[in-house]
Image (tube, rainbow, N blue to C red; front, side, top):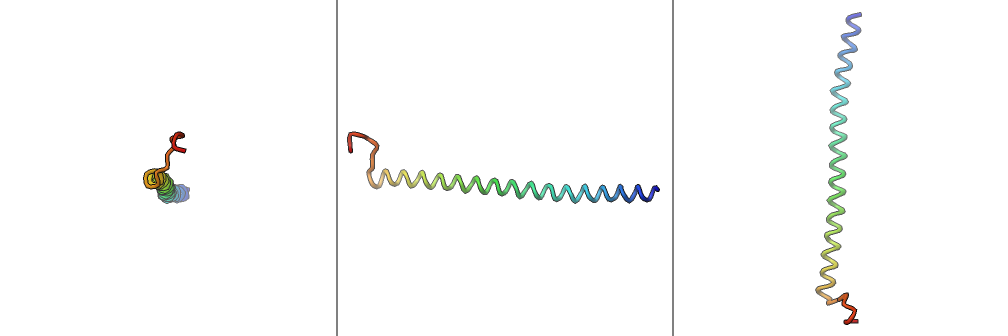
Length: 68
């Protein structure tokens, strides 16, 4: 009976270690994906802002109603 308990205890340790490894790896990849997506959205927003400013400056378009 003691051998069965020891074997089960060893199995629990193996599952805990491997499960912890899988959990950490999964969380790391999820965080990496979130950071990558956020960076992509931020870069797109920055490109839109630069494009908008370039459109305003280079083509002289104004929101001033007196100029229309």
